[in-house]
Image 1 (cartoon, rainbow, N blue to C red):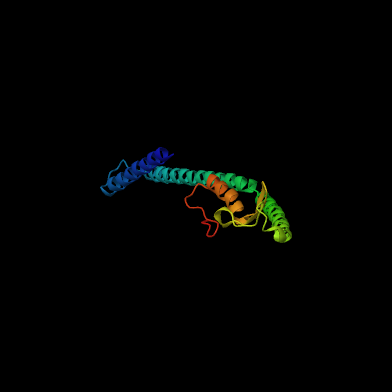
Image 2 (image 1 turned 120 degrees about the horizontal axis):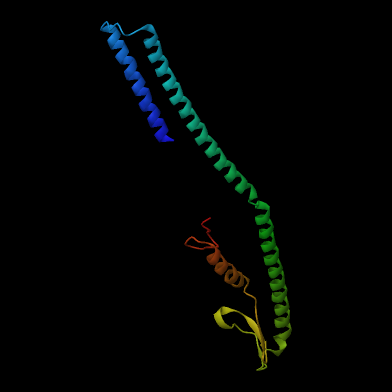
Length: 179
């Protein structure tokens, strides 16, 4: 495309030189220069300019059409994006976390009730209502031990590895997300 435009620009320059030459010869009094030759040179120059301009406009139109086609393709791809699908997935996560918190709350309440009922048996060696590892409280009767649910640690243990796996950028934080 640019080669054609360059060739046409060269053609315009050649036609302009031919017309300038005719003007110089006419000014010098050359009898071979006729009105027809002058008109032909002017016509050739106008045609070369018109042809160059038409091709430049066509090139601009083609480039605009290509850009529009690219925009249309991007618009179509954007139209395929489903915010609703993301919203539904997030709602499923909320429901799952809500269900976990409900179960953990019931477990904490049952454990508290058992702990209260065990108070009279606290002196027996097989009964323990103490703080276990990492400051987690729990209840033990013989070989059965139940720790109080640690909701935040459990959820962090699930969410952080998933975020690290699916987030290509550096730091992961639930307190101050980078997104």
